[in-house]
Length: 335
Ligand code: 13P
Image 1 (cartoon, helix red, strand yellow):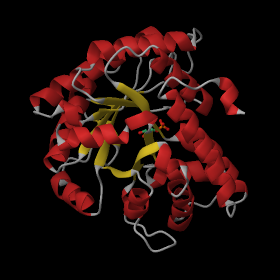
Image 2 (cartoon, rainbow, N blue to C red):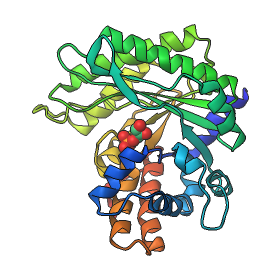
Image 3 (tube, rainbow, N blue to C red):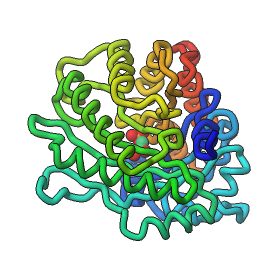
Image 4 (cartoon, rainbow, N blue to C red):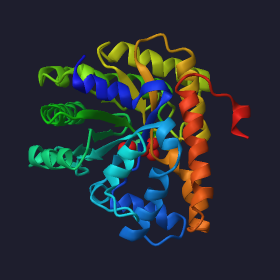
């Protein structure tokens, strides 16, 4: 088994998933503003260090995606953040794209940037302990979008990124996120997501990426948040599984979903249902940002000294998702 395949499997073993704590400073500022906490480097670190030293890190969180600022910060005990994460039994990872910018030729869409100088940045992240990386391509659905141009150019960037990451002995998380914003139906989400993922794999194969050494991070198949025809959770699970079965090559070891604006409960419930009917060889787990942190952040913001209470909430959410990643979650466990 290749070394990269081993890393990917270890991150997602036994129901473990990924904590996406890689919000850029801009996004983290929005999150902190929403709970009336000032967004300073110290406060961003304070909250994140509480999460990274919680007990669920050992049992439930196989990897943490960090942002450039965090991976270089020191903990209150003067360890580097990657050391803390490794000591807890989890793997440090790093977001390496530099954000989604307006796509020339289709200004209502986005292209993710960050390829320039990437090889050198990767070497530095590897040196300070990163085992895996993340790059997010983003697509919106409307009558004419995502365009062929956006599907093609983002897939190309994801593939060039992945090839460089594997060259540097890290596992690339490939994240093509089809947004849930809009009034599109679940059927539209299914067809657009399928098209997006298929194109990604076409490019990954062209760029000679070892598919056994990646983790795919897709969206679930959901109706748009402004769509009147919502579908049942069972239908979400069925369509999501069908989409992935049809578009992901079987060599891929694991799929870790993003939460994408679902509530904490929804994201857990949907993951659980997907695993109940998962008849593929893919591990199906989570790589949640908001759906792992929301309640913990809200609690912490009211009493930033209450480390134990904040960790208790985060531990619970992580545990629920670890059960869901094995199809063993049920609603009564929430209380
Ligand atoms: P959400 O789970 O909040 O969508 O974040 C996941 C992520 O990493 C987005 O890039």
